[in-house]
Length: 455
Image 1 (tube, helix red, strand yellow):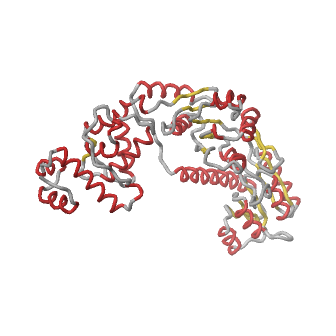
Image 2 (cartoon, helix red, strand yellow):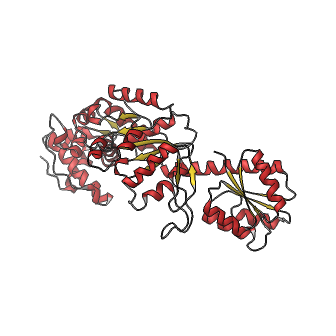
Image 3 (cartoon, rainbow, N blue to C red):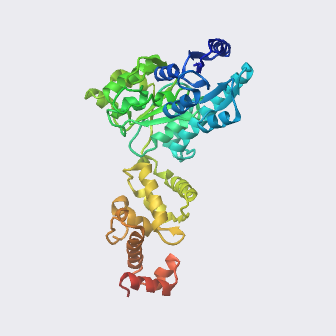
């Protein structure tokens, strides 16, 4: 879609000549004879960049610039026939992208517009990536289930087809969506995500489609939604099974017509968005219950991809643990080696929380365990007997560390950990000290300080 450029200038000849040049360059020009008229047009229209004269009757360009940046956050190029260094500096301080003096060089105007649009796009991309707060992740594993998943992703990624990603909580549905996007022709733009379950019902439409000023109480300015942000890219509708029927109808229309209206607005906005949807629900059952539209289901379910449970690919656990150790190392958590017996115990666990549960356990073990190795006893303390087919000796009761201050939590863990290791060695302090890499005298003092009995 061509970018819309708003020209705000009180000189009709300037407006006319700029509009003609912009049309020739493939832009869609709009024109306003005053700052007041321009601000009104910004409330009504979807604009990509503003060319703004400084000296005009009524509201001057500098005041209009301040309002445009605060209300619409658009790139603005100032133009003036009576410019000065002081004026240019003030315009720049107030957020102007560029300052061009009259008589205008149209080549310079077009160049500045193109650079301004590119700068704005990069700024928004960086903002999305910062909000995401993570680097590029990858699908880890060599199991047959993961091999089949990768094959499905490779087949569907280069197409523009909608994808419905199915799987339990914590299996990595979001990571699958990111991988599909990264392997698609749209990879040059960041994928936009929205969690349909985390947004209140009364705000979901505004979040998805944006709203115009005055659409509802608190709508003090026009705001773009996720579909605007994802134009030319991919949009992940996470937990789409929790979306209201009213919002489902609007999403269906976008899939059919590639257009929508903002909340409270009458203008139709066209977008080019690839939809990736994810859910842990059985949508066929939701259709029977009347909470999900069958027509939307069939539109989304062009290519269904099922993400396997961790319980169905336990052979991948050692690789996943290695990945998580490296991820946490990058966050400043000291890496440790997981012993074969510890990994074996992890592979015996059922993992109802899937990969997310495993990741949380690895982080907890890295933080709370002593030494440079994580062994079977440490894993047993946090998993308990229910996760192992061959249960380890029953450890002492474990307190709820999560609600405790760090020092107190560490003290509780040390007491439980040392008591378990001592119990496993039938109270032999020397053997226990050797196993955990601690001087016997140091261990003896610590056991005494923690009130742990010794033979």
